[in-house]
Length: 176
Image 1 (cartoon, rainbow, N blue to C red):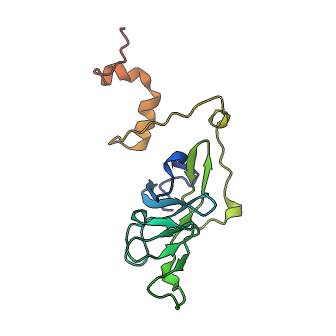
Image 2 (image 1 turned 90 degrees about the vertical axis):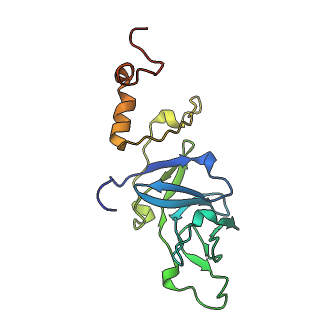
Image 3 (image 1 turned 180 degrees about the horizontal axis):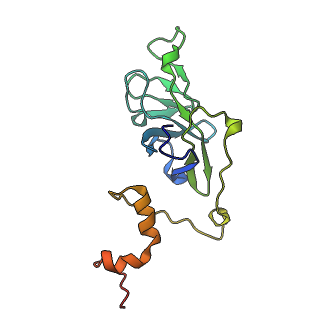
């Protein structure tokens, strides 16, 4: 971590997005690839193969292992390279492994922790509003890309009074 973002759990996507194909997302300025292991648990690793830098999201998942589309290198959820097809009888070199990140699924979301060096027993608990996990409520996915710093996005969403002044073409008007 570079100290610019607090090290905490971040929602990175919806659980339903992560199916059989690898899923690329950006986490605090870094590309990661999510995939499901053999048991269906979400896993997250650095998005680029340590061999030639190929985008691992372009690969596939075979027997719960993320497989690079370029040379077929296979990775587990801990970022360990388990198999190099072109060198089946040689040990996997140390450089072949990649970073992995703690990931969990709760409230229909994929949560990721940006510190790849933290021991699993040192991870802080994920604290959620109880409504997020209440089955009587529905989490309605909404996605929008704004050319703004995330603090401005949060401020804008919370400040609904500005809508009729700044966004005059929106459907919200104070004089209605």
